[in-house]
Image (tube, rainbow, N blue to C red; front, side):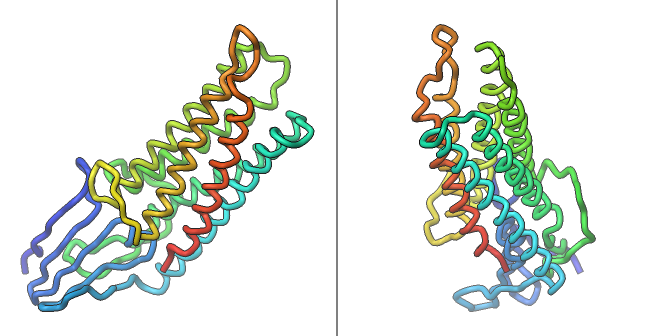
Length: 280
């Protein structure tokens, strides 16, 4: 028996949706995010108006639920700690060591959330090449799959959390010149923000099956990506305001820097709560 006819959709060279036509007349649709988050395919019989879900096996579904809960909890906690750090800077004693410590703790949770998001991609059920059900391979702690859009998005996110870690570690340093502050603290912050925004754009491309963002207000996955992307944008605004002027030695705008971080962090916490429900 030959391979079933396939129709591929996606952004650029990346495939994010595949449609098979089985010999018996059924139509099978695989979508990247739905398969790795919920472990489902859509199967529509001849003459059916809507498809019915075809799920992965129980072992795969347990794995997806567990990874999703860990990633969700990490982003909720990391966002809450970042918001607390910004609140300490804006309303508290202003002790830079205290706020840096809270930020660093939050950064560790962001690291965890970024890595577990990558594990979700590496260990998600994959579609069978003959158009059959989803299949689950053995557990992997690492993998290199740059031609998968979901892998690329989560990899960029994870690298962004690591770069933020450099920024957070350097913020403990004291006695730095203005140039050193901008090079060691501000520059990694900016790079991390750019990586977060790139990751969010790639996540939109995965959901929308095209390079440009779309509006899918009935999709929970779309809301998770949209809220997190808005948080990344607020982080970028905060980073721009946190540049230290060489002429005065002060930030461009301390209030915007703190409020941008606080509101952006709240977005990531909200996104983590929404993600908790995007599961099998």
